[in-house]
Image (cartoon, rainbow, N blue to C red; front, side):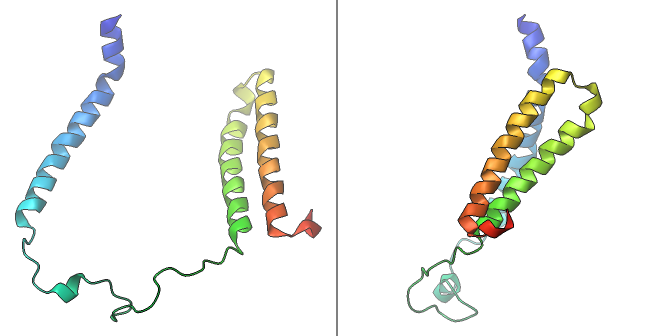
Length: 124
């Protein structure tokens, strides 16, 4: 049992080990060759198009496109899952139809919420 479990995770452990071995020299070398002193204090100031910023740093962010971004994310997720479901549709049993109908119901509810948020009720 333990040997079988270790065999299942051996490739993951091997890839993690390879990542650590490949990452460690890069971090050490970059630490060795990076400059230690700050030569010019103006260089490290926040700049805005080459000028020192003045005034308040935070401004009002307009949310007029929030609903459209939300619709894009919902449509994107729906397209990915529908493509995966549709490409294996012939191999799936008939009982796999109910979960995709539930998924589509959730996605269409999210799309209706996004349309409601946008105030574009005339396009439904």
